[in-house]
Length: 130
Image 1 (cartoon, rainbow, N blue to C red):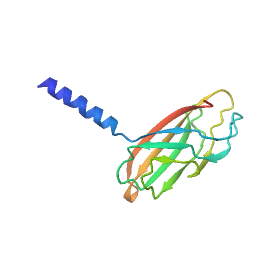
Image 2: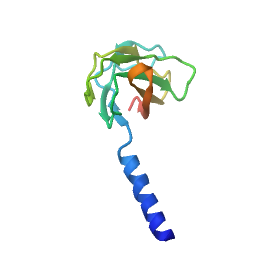
Image 3: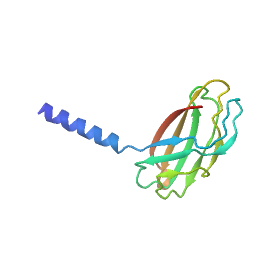
Image 4: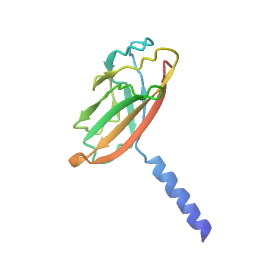
């Protein structure tokens, strides 16, 4: 009996993680910046997976994990229609621009439904410059 419950639990957990809201991103053609003075640029290319059903809006926020107090901003996509790829031009933000070396940057996307209800959140991080 314990083996059956354990097997079922592992199966359910693996199924849930496969269906989890997630994304990847590519910096795209942003102007290289290593001066510590970010440029205002178009959003990266985002490839979304398993966006929660009922999502009406996506909210984007970028954080420099090496300087978490700096506000790089982000943006919103209102009237989300189920796109799985968000191309540059959807919003602008302050580009990654570490003053020396590489920094790790993390994007967070929050899926919002009716009545501003949070339906899900996903995070992805990448070094810049790559």
